[in-house]
Image (cartoon, rainbow, N blue to C red):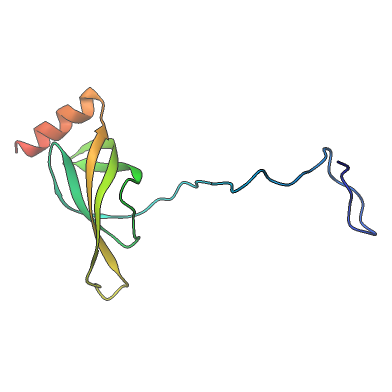
Length: 113
């Protein structure tokens, strides 16, 4: 395979190109503000402006009181909710899939207040 420029254009490619082997999936980091409805040792319920899919994994970062809390969660429920006047909203239930020991301690401490 030979890299060929458009007629009248200089060739800028350093390496030959070929067709992709099939469908390529790309993931991009997205920051999304959510409204946490409730939280427990097992997971959380939140409202989102973005529709999420059951099985999707997300990293949640928030403050529990004054303490930072970070955990990975997996979406187990995603239901359309009524609009709040600023577009559609979705109720999302997610379970914690990984927390470090410090995160678990902070969550327990927060819930015991």
